[in-house]
Amino acid sequence: MKEQKYVIENSTSFELKDIFECGQCFRWNKEENGSYTGVFGKNVLNVKKEENKIIFEGIVNGDIKEVVTYYFDLDTDYDKIKKELSKIDEHLKQSTAFGKGIRILRQDLWETIISFIISANNNIPRIKGIIERISKKYGEELEFRGNKYYTFPDMNSLKKASVEDLRKLGLGFRDKRIYETTKMFLNKEITLAELENEKDTKTLRDKLMTLSGVGGKVADCIMLFSLRRFEVFPVDVWVRRVMNELYLKEEDETRISKEVLQKLAKEKYGEMAGLAQQYLFYQRRSQG
Image 1 (tube, rainbow, N blue to C red):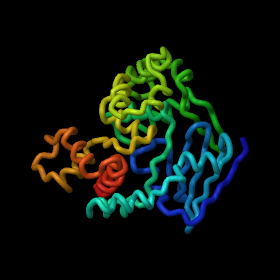
Image 2 (cartoon, one colour):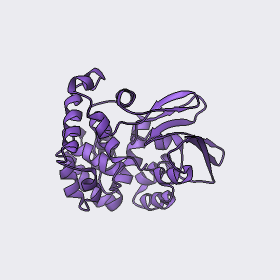
Image 3 (cartoon, rainbow, N blue to C red):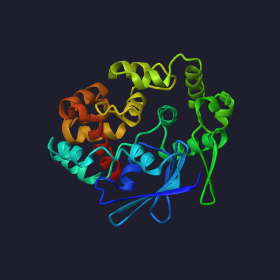
């Protein structure tokens, strides 16, 4: 594949740090010049911002304009989304201004499932390291500007890995879960198409939670970051903290149940709860 380039000008709602460091993806890394390089599908892409231009350069499986438009969801009006969210209350107005450049990427479902199983009780540098090692061991090698990159392995490639092989890559207790989930898909106990075509969000969550290593929070992340269920509201430590600080004011935030938080989110944010979550989460975690 030869290198391609695509430039968009005067794009609002597109900030590299906001997109790549809001917790939704694990295979994008910041370069010394402030640009980011990432691998998705069979693509290696470098993205940089210069004044009012966003420049995409890389080796891409297909036409770079089509690939970039789809992956970065460029046809969705995030200015409109932020305007709607900012009407809800002052907190959302501040959060959408803080994370003004967030876009929810259109990520591959298989990779998102495995990545978020790996993310359970884990930190981002470690998650990224594990995913990189899995990709190097079982993915395909790509070369871009003299550097080697590796695609995320599909299920047929990952089936070569035993529990012990995965353990050697540093997965810890997640090794068995990745192994079991891969087997479930290979045995057709569940299929990606079945998940992609499921219309009912509750049924979809239940199906995802039959996978080894997928609890409620991981299921919600998969639905939000790959299946575009913007109504789901993943709850972690930061989300519980910010919702308590802004709305509930309980002395001990750890005692607030996930159900209480999700009910509150549904009442306040409706079908945009997942988008609201991203802005609130990103601001709270960034400010420490």
